[in-house]
Image (tube, rainbow, N blue to C red; front, side, top):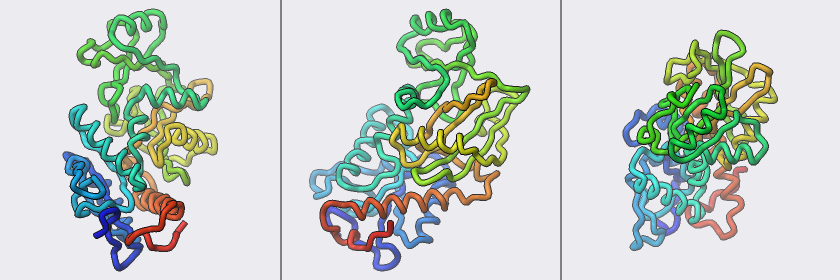
Length: 325
């Protein structure tokens, strides 16, 4: 094999792709993505970032299981896996190194870093002029208490690195704030958006740089509408406004694909709540006629083809296939 790129498969597209999964979770999403890519002639190696290594004995400097020291043509990041700060930093370092080595990474480390940190996401949305609920993030409890006392309106506390609706708290006064230790001394406080009626509703939109893939409404009797927390999904055809806002939010964080959470205020304004760089779509798939895994895989491979067409140096081994974009 080439020390730079994995050798081409003699059949299909010649592409070799690394698909990084979550070490401790089920592989429902990964199976669908891998099947969709393999149907299109791609050689998919399913592995995880915790199994990778930096190795200066290798010409590439990066050891990914299944590639014998060579590099894949592209990487799809389904998960970086949970771990300590050092472990997560190391895994993001692998993704940064792959990108610097010319490998197309979906989503790359920069986008993941921006989305996993809600404060960074909110800042980038605000900087791009994308409407969001007012949000303030600060260190230590005293400034948080002062902000809650000054606000005198319902707020939502969110763990900075949380997901799937876990750890959310409604804060009506300072007594509702979590203890400093429980919050890791970081307080992300967002204005509470009340419902227009008796039912709480928001929307999840799966979007890539090419298109809106699918969307659903999420409804619940409480303000936490996440499907993992008991929210009921239903099919939804996003309006042009929703589609444009979701696409703009994706661009603001520099992601290739993501799950955009939208909510509408009682006076009709549409706001972006969050951008998820590794969105789950199992609940959405249950109410969607679109094969979401197929659509995401198609857009990923389209991006890889475009990337291959714009490489400044002659392609090696697996790089000799014609442009598909």
